[in-house]
Image 1 (cartoon, rainbow, N blue to C red):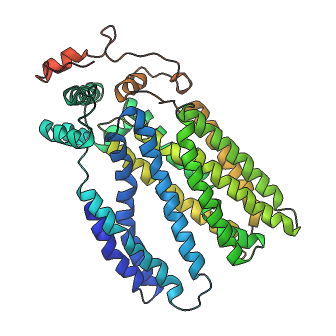
Image 2: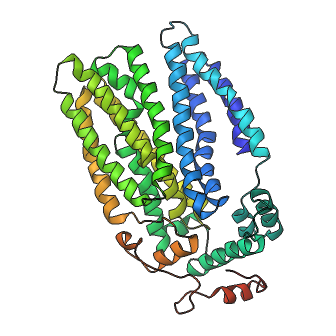
Image 3: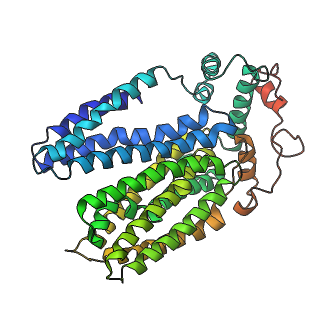
Length: 417
């Protein structure tokens, strides 16, 4: 992360001083390397440094960071949209220099994941990391028990599926977990969010002035921030599967309504389209946007988490390329010129996503990583994840008992509650 932030500061120079479009493309490609690192590391790290009860909040907070960044970018573009000199595009690039340095300083003080230390056999490193991540004032917390639980889960996963290569992500029970993680992120691109991302251009195509289009896009991103906050209050009461599936279903309906508004020639329908996009953003950042990060962090096994997240994010980026190309053709007046009626297409893809989720997306709410391992090993159907009871420390099933694993690891002194 530190290396990526350092590279980011250097690559912004290419964007800012680009004398032509070709150099600008090179700068964007170079920036794509640290951007990809940010996308994958944040989810893995967030899921490994917090307890189960806080896991959904910290992982979904990543979505809030995305929305906050988009809000700032939209504000900067709104301020520069009426300029007609070179600073109209140089100022937005220059603003990017503000962020890497303070974030880099924060990362220097952040401890490494205790799970990473355990996977590399550094038990003392895991102990030091946990001391920095926890408070000494909690009498119910035991560093020894926590490390033993991490080691037990790590050993259990090694017994279930030995190996940590990318090939292992496509073998046995991990193939299903890889499909789910990749699918959850692909749903983000196929449920119509490209219309949300192109909202300013989309609204211009609908007939609104450029300045008003940027004003509406800032409003929708502001509601997106509130939506992510709202998801924190819903997740303790509703499962991740419930929120995600409900969100995709509502987005499908909204896209269908937007498509219908495309047949109206009244001036009020243009503002109605803008209002529906604002509602779309709120619903997306209330459900699909933040909940996806929680699902991605929970559905992959801990030993293959980093590789599974990388594969999933690659699928997301590839699908995003396809979706963006399609959207440009759909909205451009010189190509297909679908205009607002392009929303019909994304209503259809959102419907397909909802069907996939109904049959394939499990419910991980309240489950530890070892419990999720068992549910996947027993090939429990996605719709029965919530109701199936499992006990990772029950010696009546095929899994090794903690005492056996601890004996193999010469850690039988640990007391796992």
